[in-house]
Image 1 (cartoon, helix red, strand yellow):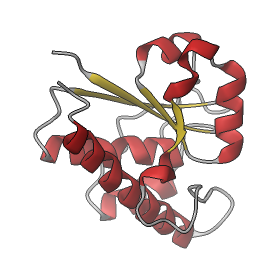
Image 2 (image 1 turned 45 degrees about the vertical axis):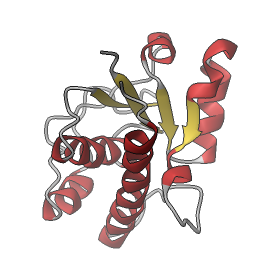
Image 3 (image 1 turned 120 degrees about the vertical axis):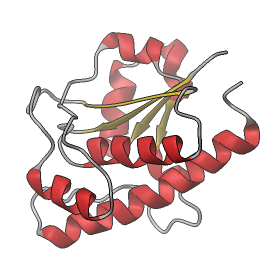
Length: 161
């Protein structure tokens, strides 16, 4: 049985992508698919490698039942393009950075995560890093919407067989 591997990517891997990892992981577990889906997150830059997610992101996530405490920031590596079936960027600059790194034969695995949010008025997940606590709530709203759409697609198209 082939597993579906999903990687969420933001700039530093301390706010948006670890939040996406935790939200999607919980949804996958609750759907009974945890044995069939591999989930990870990473950043395009190495600013925060080895660090825990931003404390503001952790607090906001915990209020909604998501635990980010075990996640540590890492940078996208070349092997990720071979290992993951879907590499989901949080915004267009991150997607552009991934496209520059990605070998052409794996380019079809790169997408914007918000493409799965239906209906969505935005294509990008807001960057909350330089703002207040409300920004982290908005990020969670966006990620929950995209997670719902992605999980529904996985189930309906039986991408995991």
